[in-house]
Image (cartoon, rainbow, N blue to C red; front, side):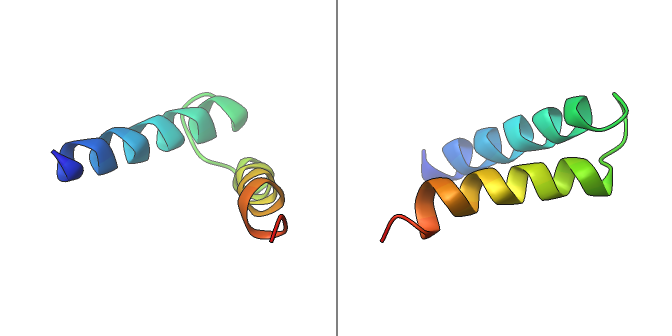
Length: 46
């Protein structure tokens, strides 16, 4: 079950990154946007 959840999350993040990029590729801007979101949402809260 955990493996399925991990793969689903990974697929979702890749899809979001592609959409933030040029629609089919993950651009540096898309990577930075996702990194900033996760960092500010989960890491810097501590």
